[in-house]
Length: 240
Ligand SMILES: Nc1ncnc2c1ncn2[C@@H]1O[C@H](COP(=O)(O)OP(=O)(O)OP(=O)(O)O)[C@@H](O)[C@H]1O
Ligand SMILES: O=c1ccn([C@@H]2O[C@H](COP(=O)(O)O)[C@@H](O)[C@H]2O)c(=O)[nH]1
Image (tube, rainbow, N blue to C red; front, side, top):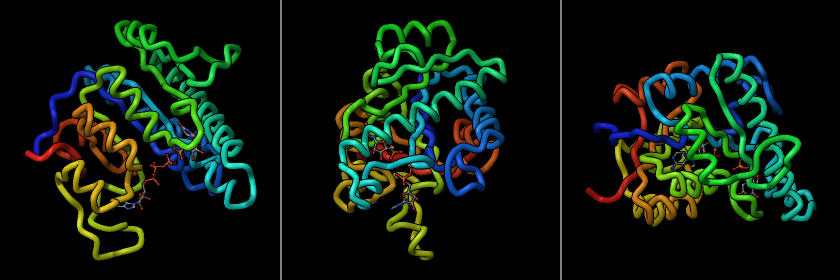
């Protein structure tokens, strides 16, 4: 299946992969490796928007399961994504890539607030814009934040780099016989409750006709392979 034509991409990286082989937090060596992947997308001529999850540090729902107020936990999760964004900014700038971090929760001593037109200007100047703090609202995820920013920034695709190499008919981490889709419709993902991405994010992409490309970010060189059409991935799109 050919990749959609992409000029501007929203790349969403799982927070969990920033742990590398650790069980928690940020492995700077691994972040440096991921930064090279992100640079590949930029070097291929794309305008790149970046969103990083927070699952390597904190998820509100996990805090709630242990008695923490859900909204407090969600704000903590959003703050975790800002830490990840700063780590990635640092790694990208070490590679000579110009970046700006924009946070949905204003914190002016740390990074810019999210301002769409300003983000546009950064992209025009060839900078990568890292959107942090998700949507800025509790009860959402960074997948939904990524879908929202992809729609606002008129991205041609949302590429989700995660720990699995696509969308399967059931969770491949629990079912070794699960089968991967080459392409699958938004409607199928939603009706079958396939959990590789949250339903709000998928619905937002469906409404705005933004293809979602799910691929593994764990293998080195995968961003380039996926972009050139030689990769392993699933494309979620409308029924063809
Ligand atoms: N049908 C499915 N196909 C593929 N993966 C699935 C499916 N159902 C559940 N998953 C799980 O979805 C997970 C990927 O989504 P998840 O939202 O957990 O990660 P992420 O968004 O990449 O991480 P983070 O929250 O750290 O940013 C994988 O761990 C995979 O096991
Ligand atoms: O818009 C958002 C985005 C995120 N959160 C909270 O942050 C964590 C980490 O994000 P992941 O997408 O799970 O990596 C998430 O679990 C939420 O607790 C949020 O509240 N709103």
